[in-house]
Image (cartoon, rainbow, N blue to C red):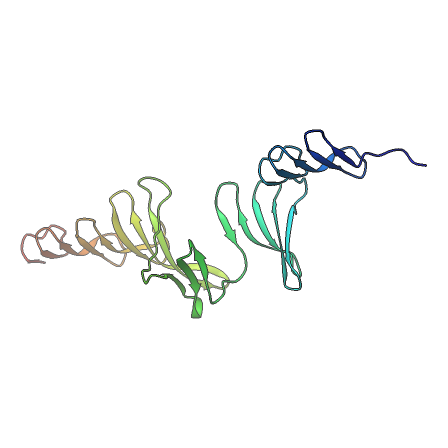
Length: 232
């Protein structure tokens, strides 16, 4: 005969505890006062509360179709993992709030908030559109006065190469266009000031060879302060 091991405890208040194989901890706990179920915890804070020390905490399976797991990894990131075949992480929400989607975007695209979609079209074209017929892309700097940059790149021998870049200059709220790299490494070609002035730059990107003064409706060739309609 073996020693007695506690398997089940029904408290007078209605709480129910199911114990582990050693009979030392309550791995499954029903809190009758709150109608909450705890897996790995005896103080469930929600209807179903799961605590685990390993990665995979919850598995959802559609019989004969697919399985997904959900867990919080050791660094505090929330992960949804595809368990069909070779386990593959599909979505990671990092502790800092950033998110990573893994895998290919299908023809249906990625839908955000039920109305905005992102698709990868032919030849790597990225498309953003809204189901109501409106579409757009917003790029926001990370801090007040910072620049928001868009890059047009080509994969050069496996390494992305920035051909053109645009940025909203946070220091003067202008829109600037560069060739051959980023705003810090490329050559400035065009500047649209927030007051409507337009500057086209020379080959080196250092001086405004063609300048439109929107306040006076004057064009300068070689000057940035035209004093007649066409000043050369």
